[in-house]
Image (tube, rainbow, N blue to C red; front, top):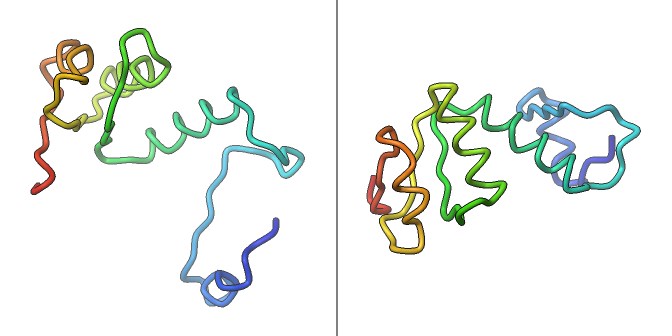
Length: 98
């Protein structure tokens, strides 16, 4: 694994944890790997903020999957998020001051 030089001291001192669901053989991000990464990070999170999720988007599908696993979801109260705000009562609306 290649680390940026500025991260090496924290990693060596045990102050930096790097988690990945991928084997070292994966060198490039693909749409499939990005989706798997997002699910991995979502599973680790206590709650998830989604800035925008368009209707029928992969982002909305991921948000629904996370909601179904009991993750609290946060988004912006914006007309562009109408599809996202309407799909579940568990969605919490943040104003940026929370």
